[in-house]
Image (cartoon, rainbow, N blue to C red; front, side, top):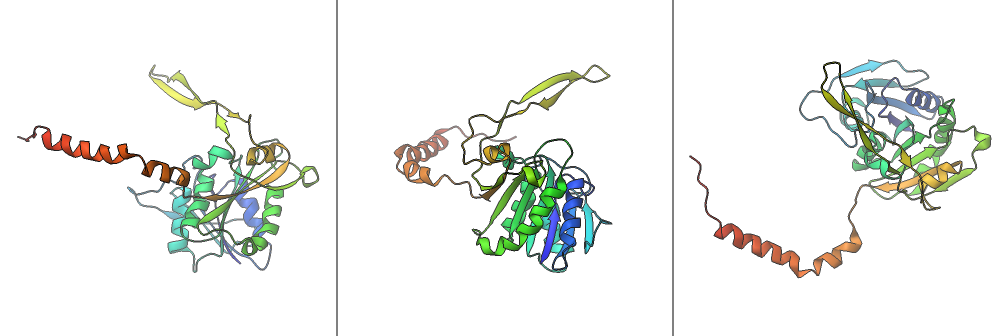
Length: 274
């Protein structure tokens, strides 16, 4: 299986190195790594359009076929890897292992999930994997689980242009209670900006806060991980509210808004430039 690995923590992050080393240990896997040259957390699905992307060959532990770092974002890395760097399209794209969870609303901001979503856009099977917070980071636990899971991906018959968002508790295997297939939770944040001053007396603001893990459904990814279970959430990028389509289509005010806008433009005085 040809596997492409990326992330948003950067090419030198311990999570991506643990995953690449473990997957490349299996002789059936042909592992490539393309990742940002530095941390790009919370970049969402950002692409680089106004400056060139540069790449550099990197040495990674294990039997990785080839690895590159890029000056771009996680989404850039996957797009560049598939279209230019890899000799053939990968059979599977994995983003991670992220240093910290990507649960609930965090998937909208996450560079880790965005890299997997970029692969999904291309019609490639993809996985985003993250490790929950805690001491003694157990990336090897998440890497071992993913190394066993990848062989079942063809049997999952995933919906086209979708991905699996996986969150692993930061626990040894004997303390993990099981695996749950979940829905994305809420995972809201108590966000606030701290106002500070630099050495020159000028004000700046620093975003801070913490996740509020209350009122989560038993079926959510947040609930699963907080209860020592690995969470697997199928995610699609199409965010259309299909239930609202019929309701909104029946509102005559929507068509009236266009008619009144046309009238207003016709009746408004013309502005000429000098």
